[in-house]
Image 1: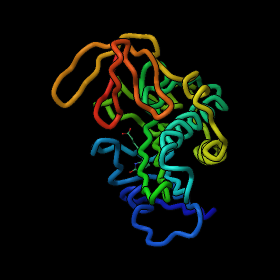
Image 2: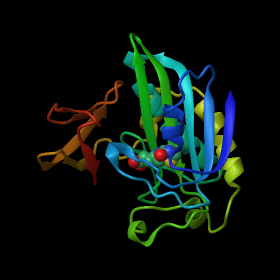
Image 3: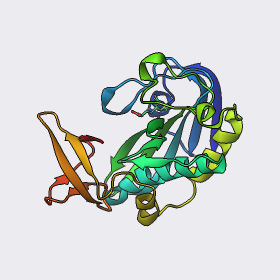
Image 4: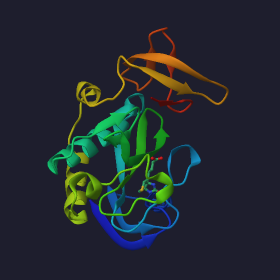
Length: 223
Ligand code: BTN
């Protein structure tokens, strides 16, 4: 695996997306990002002191199993935090939450070729020692705030990369998931309504108690 460490970059995901013909898995780690990207076209604030990294994996799985990449990355973050005595949960599909606030965001960008995911870019932004901007203080948290002390960003990053290569099961993902069996607010482009989460299916879709099947590409949930 190739590792690139850099002081500052617009976005580690964008860097890996631009690689023409990568021949091995590549990880890029930045101290800060000037144009961090989030899911659904949103931006992601990246102040120095956090972990901002992206991992490019070549042929990680078959196309039909692409949700395993989301499960694997979210569980890898939960395990990493647990190594630092922080209990984290997953908010479907793959936000990582501590004490009701988001500690980590994950942006996955896949390229499909026939039956396979030929390239997967897993971008992870984890709040470690970085300050949390005032405007997101109610919804975001860092390990520093949870532990009351700084921890080594390098050790967190190394633990995370190790965990990203460990296999994960659907059962393990579900074990860490928030809101299973609970009522949530479902937000679509056109409406907002309440629904009871019955299950998460192996392909990553959410099933409500009414039997409705919802995809994370189309909806967001909140408590
Ligand atoms: C989200 O919560 O919406 C996902 C945020 C993902 C942020 C990470 S930081 C490293 C990588 N590079 C990016 O531009 N985004 C991801």
